[in-house]
Image (cartoon, rainbow, N blue to C red; front, side, top):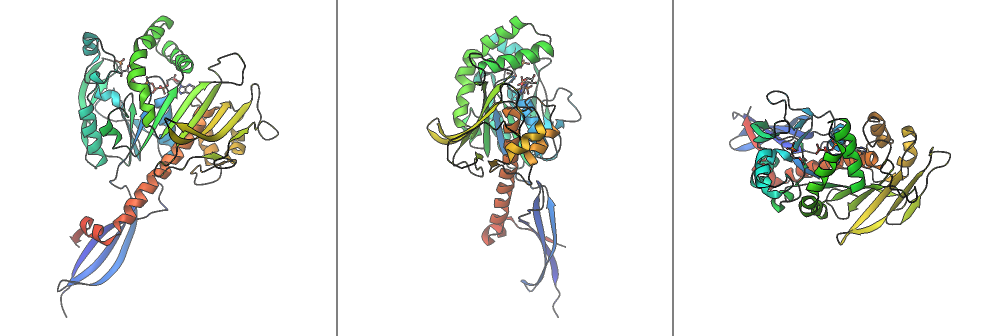
Length: 407
Ligand SMILES: Nc1ncnc2c1ncn2[C@@H]1O[C@H](COP(=O)(O)OP(=O)(O)OP(=O)(O)O)[C@@H](O)[C@H]1O
Ligand SMILES: O=C(CO)[C@H](O)[C@H](O)COP(=O)(O)O
């Protein structure tokens, strides 16, 4: 009887039962005289995959990126927290499955340098796109990086921090969609398009109430950034897969009331792993005023609209919500009329919204659409990983990526 050496092979497989993990199977087999004799599947384990999915979130400063990120990381499992350890001024958030890096960290000119050269942080000259590209590319391929840290308190660059590749990497900031090399690394992209009236209202609320700035200085800062915003930030929306537009309501005639919002979720057609959400009937144009016995609406009420549209000459679907909810638990009524939500169980959108009822925008379309995008990103991630796994099962590829180790 020949002596048999035992080998173990680890290979990917699909893992529907896992939340955000992926599945690895181990095959034990016995080799004698160069031939595999006996084999047995030994273990199926759900574990973090090395594949990093990269999502870009672009918006001007004070447009709700951090608030959006808090919702997203909650939907994706876990709370994203500041990186523990060395730098208290780190801008990075690390969660169980996600890492959020803020692209302010790639400012090539610090506050003093920008002042000397007379440029704003929105100007590409003030940012190091080569390094941004190299580091996002490294993380996407599973390699940790030493990322710079821009310190918003001192206005200087601090010593770099170590960033390990997560399951999902969010790059948020002023320019995630600016450089074509970086755009090519993104699996999905979002642009927050906040109208001037609303941006102004949010900025006043934050910078006056929380940071003690004067109304005059806020106005001056918005004015000083306006031309660079129009030139370098706003055009990025043409490259986004999904755009969330936030505008004043149309429900109150002759008044731009930024406290009541009309929010439009623009979803480009044909985006890989993303199916647009629809109301009642896919592809139809529908206007819906749901305020009746099942949804309490005080003045000025709520109006939904859904229909096909074009965005920068591309086909898109738009879902719009104007107005605000009185009672968040009644959102289930709206949720039950929406399709393609990528929920895992009935009422998941409502449950997520109730969980974070204290976040800004929870009673209007901003919170609702951010939550839906979170669920869509979760599905996108799972589909990408499942795709990798089933490809991994193809024999030729499998041979290339097998890790063969004697037991
Ligand atoms: N959906 C919303 N509804 C109402 N207010 C909001 C909403 N989102 C954000 N805000 C408010 O706007 C202000 C800016 O939000 P946030 O800090 O999330 O923006 P940001 O884009 O991360 O800003 P920065 O880039 O300057 O750090 C905050 O005061 C926040 O409460
Ligand atoms: O636009 C910004 C962030 O999105 C900031 O203005 C930019 O990062 C510069 O920061 P600071 O004003 O703290 O020097």
